[in-house]
Structures are given as C-alpha cells and as structure tokens.
Image (tube, rainbow over all chains, first blue to last red; front, side, top):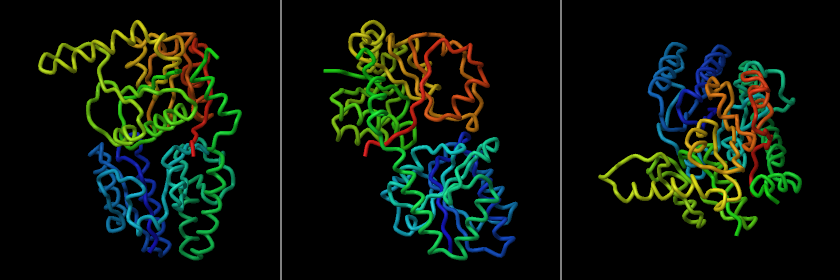
Length: 182
Length: 176
C-alpha cells in the first residue's frame, strides 16, 4: 500500500485535485491498485468537494480516496499518515509554506507543478514532478523500489529546506523593509 | 521601541497566516514589536493561542465604521483603531505589512502610512488577477512578490506602467 497525503483546504483556488485522481486512474491501468490518497483539509467549497467525488467515481477510483474534512496540524497526524508521501502543489519551482512545513516535519514530500505553462522550468530533482506523467512515473518507481526512492526523496527534501533559511543579506533586506527609515 | 503592523483577514492554518507568523517572529527576534491586525473577523483561529503564547499582540477589529449598538464595546474599539490608524499610523509604526493583494482594500484607505508593503501570496493559476489598478498607484507603497513567477504574471496582466508603487522580490523564509 502506498499512502499519498494532500494537505490543502478543499477550495476553488486549490482545485488541482482532479489531476491526482487521474494519476490513480493511470496507476490502475498499469496494474497498481494499492495507492490511496487522503485529502487533509477543511471543505471550504462543497462544489469542489463534490467534483472530487464525482471525478473519482467516473475514473473508478472512489475506493482509493478519503477525506478528513477538517484541517489537522501536521504534528497531530497519526504515525500511519506521517509515514506516507505528502503531495504538495507548486507553481514551477515555487513551493509554499505547506511544502516547507511538510519537509520540516520530516515527511517525504513530493512536489507537483500545477502551472502547465511552467512545466519545463523545474530543476531535475526527484521530488519535483513537472507533469502528471512524471508524478505517475514516480509512484510507479516507489512501488518497485520503495527504500531507494524514499532515500532519494528525503535527501532532495533536506537540500531544499536549506534554501529557505535567511542568510545575512536577506536578513538585512527584510530588516530594511520592516524599518525603512534606517 | 521599533514597531510594525501586520494586517491580514484570518489566522487559520494556511500559508498566508504562516507568513504572518514568520514575519512576526522575525520582528521579535530583531527587537521589533509586531502587532497583528485581523480585520473584519472576530473568530478565534489556529494562530491565536500560538501568538498569545509568544506574547505577540493580536487585534481583531473593523476599520470601516459600522454602527453596531448591539456590540458597543466592539464598536468603540473599532472607532479607536480606525482613528489611530487613519491619523497616527506613521507615528505608531515603522512599517505596515498587508498580507495578500486581496487584503489591500482593507488597508489602503484606512491605514495611512508612508511605508506600506503589500505581500503578494498567490499565483495566477489559483485565480484570475482582478485587483483594480488603483491598488498600485501610490509611489510610497511596495508590492512584495514571493516568487519570480508572480513578477512575470503582474507584468503580463497589468503591464509595467501600471505600477506607480515600488516592487520587491522576497522569497518565503523560515526563522528556524
């Protein structure tokens, strides 16, 4: 069983969920049926929520998805959930705070680009998936050689985290924004 | 003591709110006193107890005066903050940081300050840019992008000439 977790409120501005259902569908076509997605987040849009359910039904992957229907702090997730893979939506190479926090919590974090116009702008890193096909391929690889891929994802995640610590130049830049007269 | 004001509409578990948190914590680490102003929302949310524990002041009020005689204390408090921020914000705070372009309307006409920073925290893929051009017409204001894609999106949507305000790029960060 491969558990994928998506931490995001279920809302219109985050509605990239159907792509993940297509991944489940493509995986099933490749004979991989034991992939499960847990959507972790409050339902802000009943329409978006219903659309996920309808799409899952149409693609015959309803039994592979579940919802918490509420937001849960990362440190309060169960150990079983924590041991899964956390899919985080990115814009090109840009990662929001949920992805950073996910890595900081030690979760295996996979980034999926949702801006199709930026599909070629990623660095060639294992945890970054430019397209749906790349995400599907990564999960297939996980199903084949999980221990090795886990190691690679974790190493990639740790390297990423270092980029978000403020160096002295950026610290000064932020200070000059907070105290502009000085 | 140096002070900053951080303005947002929520303190729920979300990315914009995490930026509020990181800015406030950074300020505190650098001997700057942050005040977090949550406008038009009186709910107790995820970051409220976290800020309380860190002794970071959170103010929940309205800046547009609504006569609400059923909640006189809230109304008085709202009048107090509206007055303070309309006429004395420059004296009270070194800078004002508004999180999200969608929150500019809560601050632009209500908080008069010569150093206002509008942090842009979404991308075009999350929804069309429908902010009025007047948001960017004050040369003293600064729009802060958190990624390069946003800068390109703003240019292609509005054109560079729309921006009379300053622009800056400051990627997301973690304090520790």
